[in-house]
Amino acid sequence: MGAGLGLKAEHYVDAWECAADGLWFEVHPENYMVGGPRRAWLERMAERHPLSLHGVSLSLAADAPPDREHLQRLRALVDLVEPALVSEHLAWSAWRGKYHPDLLPFPRTDEALVRIADNIQRTQDALGRRIAVENPSHYLRLDGHEWDEIDFLADLARRTGCALLLDVNNVHVSAHNLDYSAAAYLDRVPAEAIAEVHLAGYSHDAAGELLIDSHDAAIAEPVWALYQRLVQRVGARPTLIERDDHLPAFGELLAEREIAQATLNLAGGRP
Image (cartoon, rainbow, N blue to C red; front, side, top):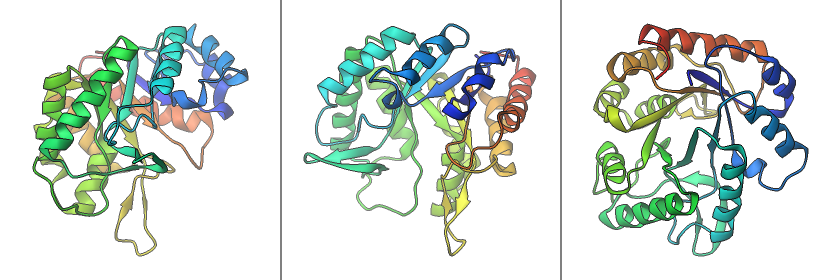
């Protein structure tokens, strides 16, 4: 696995026919759990390209364990398409029985660390495999943190054996919004824990002050520079180009993918 792309329905045919060396595709498993044409396409794609399942609804930072039925459906999909990678966000969507359609932040406390580690372990036990956990995007400062974010992620990996999905765009967005050094953040992430890297584009809020992790634009130059810095330090890692809105032609995404692949090649090719 070298550099990959998010698989969108608009690009199924182009994705199927593409034979770029090291290419792989990532999907949100929630879109493929119930069968039908989408899952049939995913099964066919798995015959030709490596896949990654990137979840958005396990709510690992919630106040309760992941939904058992959801984990069973996810396990069935994992067994069906045998993805190379499975990942989820370090965030919550459900709290006290109510679901919120977003990936929400939390104070990094000792209590949260124990709770999230337990939820990750439950997920890994249910799936019969290691997962990767993605660092979040931040838009405002929260009170109550007892842990530095990198230390929190590293300890989760140590306690559970999970991997890290390092989203470089999230680091850039958060560093801008909270006024810290993105480069210094990346330099501290433990290399041995990184199983996957994400790259994406961002937008600005109406006032032009906040950066928004919108996945609706080309990858910006500061993010490319951070990515190159990261790869020089940790070596090649499977790298995803994310685009979820304002989708361009497949060839435009493939061109961004080739930039990432060239960076990986300079670091010694595929991991």
